[in-house]
Image (cartoon, rainbow, N blue to C red; front, side):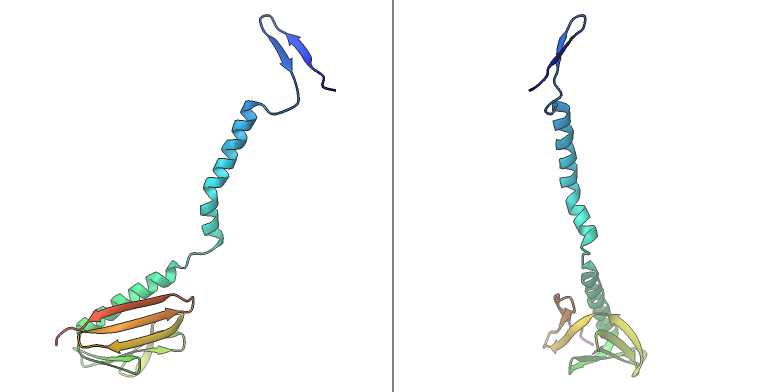
Length: 150
């Protein structure tokens, strides 16, 4: 059985019932639940890493290839390999080697341009070179690089 204690003060009679929630407790719990709900997306991104590295790395690779083509005098595409001759009369080869795309100068060296590559395709067209890259995370990227007229 509920026991109510009535106390009196000089002007107000109050009931001190110890069962149930007060309005302040309910408001505090709503605020706490709202904060947790607001923070869940940011906590999720901390737990599950975002694979933006692949996207930035591939875009940087495409930019590098575009610069190489624009600075070269002669280039050819064959067997998913690109060969460029620059103004210093160096032969630059860009090809896939295992899971990386590498750059070699005069058939020596091993400069890595892009890592974690599953497939790399080059298709030469009349007006552009079409590049397809698929990363090991399953992302697929394509770019058309317009040929410069030597």
